[in-house]
Image (cartoon, rainbow, N blue to C red; front, side, top):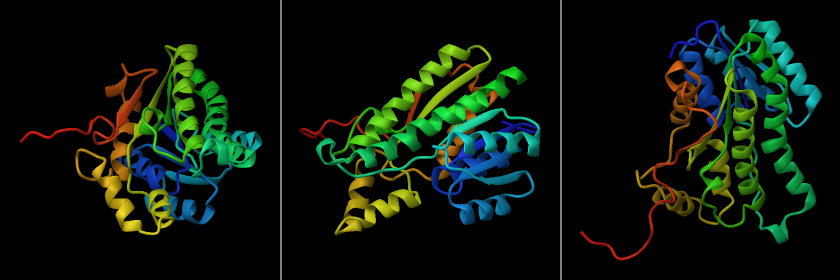
Length: 256
């Protein structure tokens, strides 16, 4: 899956799934541009990866910042071949308990951010004759836990965006939605800490997965790299679940 002389933008790239994607793409010889609002973590990761990695501070919900980041990517590397829309936030609340501000915050980052990054990246991919947009959705686009209405809605919307990009820009551009289950990331670890018994919630999350564990962030990166590579060239417009079997088991009588 060598990506030599090819460039990927990864949003939310400083940690978690974004960092996992960055590690895999860099290993496969890609130029890696990390976009994040966490400047300290972003610069640190870029330095750890090496000379083919850069960081640009960017709030993906702000169009002028996205446009600037895409421009800096082209200035740094001369190409833009892949976009991994990974930046996202999670807020806990039901529809009736969600404020307009909270709803807008989730939609601005999770959905609008992906739209803006695609809007300003795709023209350069078209100029080059090819490109891939990966939208990081979630298994919660298919099954939903309680109290995350805005998040579930946003991750479902990304599948629609993926389909639209695939239809509108084929055959030059492909678009794929990756839908992880539980991943051992800083975001999830912080979410567990909001519970009175974090370890219990963590174990309950693990138990939801048939494989008996959460995913490692690099495993999501491996799938992102595969769908961007020539090996994944026939995958387009589809949501791909990488969820350890979460959500497919129906409780009932057990038979040994």
